[in-house]
Image 1: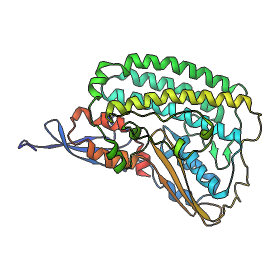
Image 2: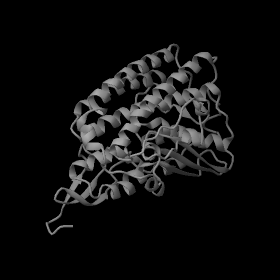
Image 3: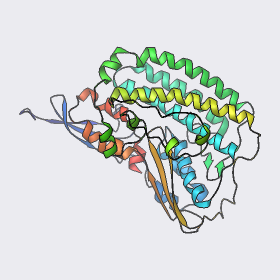
Image 4: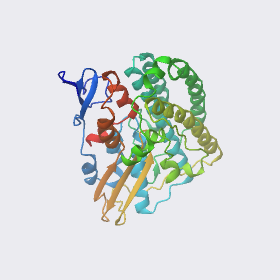
Length: 370
C-alpha cells in the first residue's frame, strides 16, 4: 500500500452496479481496491424457520423468493428432498414438465445476467434487449402457471398440472426466436471489443481455488472444472436428456460470461428435446397428490440438490414424522461466490471492475440474507 490516503467507497444497496439489494464497502488506494467487505442484510430472511412452521405443501410459496430471477430451481430442490424422504416417484410426464420449467428459468436468469454485466461496462443496450426478451419467457410461464415471476408450481410430488394444448409449439417458436437473437447478442456484446478488452484477464480464478472455496455452477465450469448436478446427481428428466458438461479454462470475467452464453445455447437444445418428448407422451396425471393439509412424511433426513443458474442449490430436510419439516436448511451458491470469493478476488482490481466482477460471479442477495 502506498503512502497516499486510502478512502472507502460504498457500492449498494441502491447502486445499480451491485446485484440486487446488496452492499460492498471497498477500500481503495488511488483506483486500486486494497480491501473489501460485503455487507448483506437488506432483504427478507428467515425462510427456513418459516418453513418449519408450515405444512410440507406450503414450502414452495416461500423458497421461490430465495432467488427471484431463478425461482423454479428452489421449488424443485425442496421438492426433490421431500420426495426422497417420502419415497415418491414423480410420473414421467411430470418430470419432463419440471425440467422444461427449469431450463426456461435458466434462460430467463441468463438474460438478466447478460444485461447486468454489460451494464457494468457501459453496454446498456444489452440490458434492454435482455429484459425485453425475458418477458417472452415470462409470458409462457404465465400461461402455464398463472404467474410471471413466482410460479409456486413444482410441489413435492410433481408439477401442479399438465401443459395447456399447444404449449409445446409456443415454446419451440420462442426457442427459434432466442436462437436467432443469440447471434445478434454475439454481434452487439460477446464479440464486442469493449467487452473483450475489459473482461479478458480480469479477476481470474483457478480450478484449484474454485475447489478450495467450494465454487459451483458456471463459475466453477469456467475454470475447467466439469461439475454439474444435472449429471453428477441427476433429477427430474435429466437422466434421459442428451447433453455434455460445457467448460472454459481461463476462469476470468470473460470465461464466466462466455460460459453462460454457451449454456444459454445448450438450454435451448435441452428444451427442444423436452418438447419433442412431451408431444409423444400421453397426457394425464403429472403428480402424486396426497392430502396436502394432513400429509405426513416418514421420519428421516434427505438432501435434494439442483443445478441452478447460479450453481448448486440444495435443500437439507429433516422429518420427525409430522405434517411439516422439523428442520430445514438451504445450501445456496451465493454465500461462497458473493462473500468469501468476492472479498478475496476484488482485492487488486480497479474501481471500474468492482461491479463487473460482482456481476460475473452472479449472486442472489436473498440467498445470503436468508
